[in-house]
Length: 494
Ligand code: 4AD
Ligand code: MG
Image (cartoon, rainbow, N blue to C red):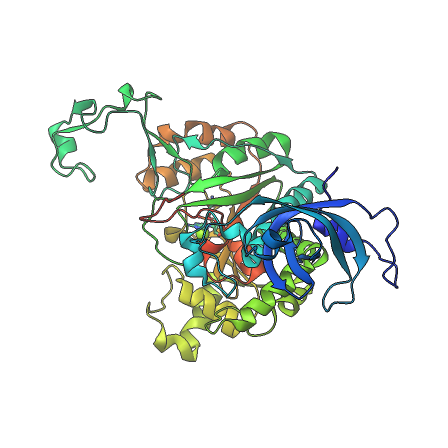
């Protein structure tokens, strides 16, 4: 017999008086017991199969052959139920399944760590292999799927092509050096080359006499996990017009915060014939599309999470309800200011004395500043543009003032930076000089520079961290709770 999904059964319109639903006899559902309430002649089982936020009520009659075993089941048991769908007089559900037979597929050992009483998110992180069984993580991970699907829909409908940029790469996109090495060299006794006297004094070699001989390594050169697919996406934007990458990216920086992961998923559109203003419009449309998509399709998940956050004492993110906030942002125009204007606002603010990092033009905005701007000052998403060149990556288009670049960061309440992007430097000479000035090796970027020699075009792009977007849209406060198995400094369990 074919298994039905609980989400589909819950949609069935039952006859008002409890009569059989047409064709709804002999249904089979399979899932995990969320709770069991034992009555005199019946037991009521809430069954969840992961297909929806809501569970289905199963009514188990004491006449069932294995009723003794069934009525002793606890949370987490896996069962297959065959039965008849009828309208329910019980509170909170329109239909229930009257069990004709219940087969226990998987029992639960006594040490099962999930309990009926609310378990803390911190604890659940330690049993991440089981957390998909909870209502909270069911909601979060269905919405993670939703944002991924909505991303493809948004870009595809606008004529963007999905490109798969490499995960192993030899170029450092952000020029920041926080990369995981990929090597098959024997780390206990790697192949080495002698260093010249000159090199021994150089930064990174610290008086050592030899260096790794990467020509003996797997790729015959140093390689690492990508920090961003942008540089390769640019190659494709300058051929296919508009593209996006969506894949895992890796950062080896030692950031132990609720907003950073060592492995996260990034969506990076790259668009030819697009300037920074058009890019900001695209970023706004995209974020609003994602929000609209979950409001329209995942309302039970959103309302569940909203209630959950209402119960949390230390709620960082929500002042008003999650749903109301999303509904407002879906329609709102995002404020756009320059970095210089942002600095003026921060300097003049009454909060300026409380900032841990003192504000001055040229500094990188810290999370506390970003959050002040978006939470206190503007109370909504803010796009900050035209940052100082010195604090941004080498590839950003230089403004004529000689000091700033056409960069943009999108800031949102509760999080700070959710997206970062820029118009790209499309002038060969300027880009070459910038790479040199920063001490990067132009030879490493030969193909990237080529793009500016052969039919260069104005183009722009940004990156959205999927997990940051998910935090914002679910209201979850810790990034480790929106990715199935988080990787962060000191932890790669599961
Ligand atoms: O600002 P980032 O570093 O920009 C880039 O990588 C550009 N190459 C993107 C582009 O223009 N195509 O990262 C972009 C976004 C951030 O705004 C943030 O949402 C997310 O990626 N992000 C992280 N998310 C989780 N953990 C980390 N360690 C993150 N670092 C960046
Ligand atoms: Mg950034």
